[in-house]
Image (tube, rainbow, N blue to C red):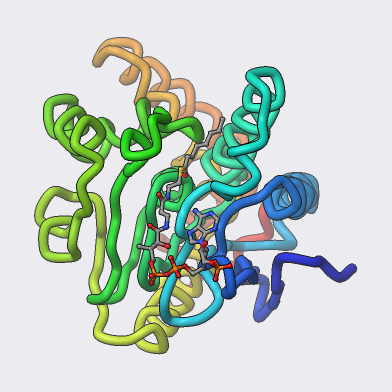
Length: 262
Ligand code: CO8
């Protein structure tokens, strides 16, 4: 299957998705979003054939410079609602697909680009990365989840300051405020590190990683008692898996576990 606006590469179960519109700084139009949605829905249904995902942008200049401004300039309110819904669906798929997703941010991650990065599990970035929610400069508000997700990374007050001013966030600040998990000197270094991280995670039971992701995400909108209750149910549920029996037995038998995803 070939895509007009995405490049896909698979190595050892790790899927690398590169948004490929470098002449438009990888801006997200409806085609990019529809193609991302299709790929992510396939991963969701592939029974852990895919063990992890890397999302990045083509070239060194931009990860994703936002939603496509030209496209938005011609939209009616109803069309804007559908476009916003499509972007939100994609962001929700990155968030809920049952495998780890790393955003590898090279250059601009503005508006919808910052929002897509934040919907991944965590963000690796190069030292030339630039983040921001500049929507107010266009008399827009963030529409692919930025009003909800930025505060989960940086807190409510800081997210308001960033969104109200529409200012850029350079890498030192992005790292300091917890938006970015790790910083690299080059894109090659970042991609190697992301592959290595996902390789480590892929050596665990995919069921257990999926459960960790599900429980952590569910806790985002829960209070501490609800969150602990969700954790308790998750903890109980893994005891019905073969992988948990195998993990515990392998430790006791002083051997490496052989996880099957069952
Ligand atoms: N959309 C469309 N095209 C873009 C975008 C974009 N977001 N960003 C850059 N481009 C295009 C430029 O128009 C230009 O195309 P062309 O060569 O045909 O004129 C090409 O990419 C290269 O860009 P520049 O020449 O501007 O490159 P510079 O290095 O001079 O500047 C910047 C780079 C600073 C990143 C600049 O391009 C810029 O400011 N881009 C816009 C950034 C922005 O404001 N992003 C947020 C957009 S709004 C948004 O994302 C809302 C998300 C939620 C939507 C919900 C809808 C309901």
